[in-house]
Image 1 (tube, one colour):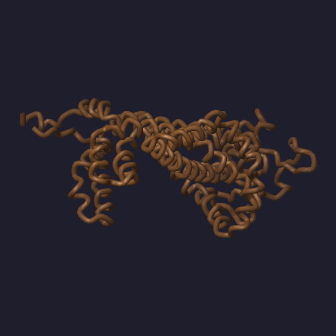
Image 2 (cartoon, rainbow, N blue to C red):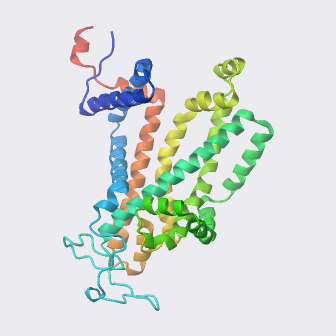
Image 3 (cartoon, helix red, strand yellow):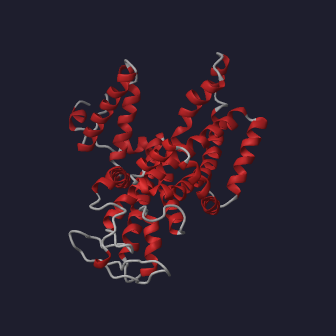
Length: 381
């Protein structure tokens, strides 16, 4: 008898999503949906398992919320990140560094400023929405540049072995020997001026960076500090993936199907990227999901230390850094951005744990077997 599962609303949505995804892929590869019915069924069962993991669903909601704010946050913000109210509406010097004018933060719960203001007199809600774009773009760039670099180097080292393996792994060990945060701090401190000159000499890169972070043209002079954090985190992030991928490749390349692929004359590149990588990608995807939260935490930490985004560019870690001098009177400058960082990191970790269970066949099957059969299936026994 074919097993049928009692479907809820989320299961029906999963069916529609998998069908739509298969139809979309078929637009580029004719007949893909018909040839990959078993793969689509596997995706459907994976989503069923996700639907029955409450922590993973909570993480998914938090992550979707973060992605939504990262994309649309600057457009939803009531005020621009660089909008400063007129001086006469604010109390000055509470306290202010010598030679500067700093506004007094306030927490009046009004329609105009529902979460209060920051130490520059700007709407805190608007700053948090703009800061979501900063954290989102940085996490995407770091993961999508750092992770593939580590995966490629790990594949090459694990598959070829010998001197190539030794060279790549010793370089990896050199980077892993330094604490990641310390290395990121050192790179973030020495790179801003060089990156600033590089960006200003390449107009296309300058415009692209301003577009990605939703910044005005006047912020060109502050891009160096922002890009230095991104570059530093990419350098810090790839070694762990190189080591993980190498270990999985060493095990996978000894299997019979790899020997058969070599016997029929397939190239090393084809074997690595079309045969080995798809079979070891599961644990790597789980690690990537967990690392999104890690990237956001480190980026906020670097901004908290005074590195990275500089005012008026909005960043959650920088808001906390600027608000320390006003604590506990202006507690909202620390509470709200800190809460957002915690929720986003928690969401990615919960989702990563859920993926770990779903991508593990043994765990996924145990989840699937807990699903109640429909009454019609039971009556057909």
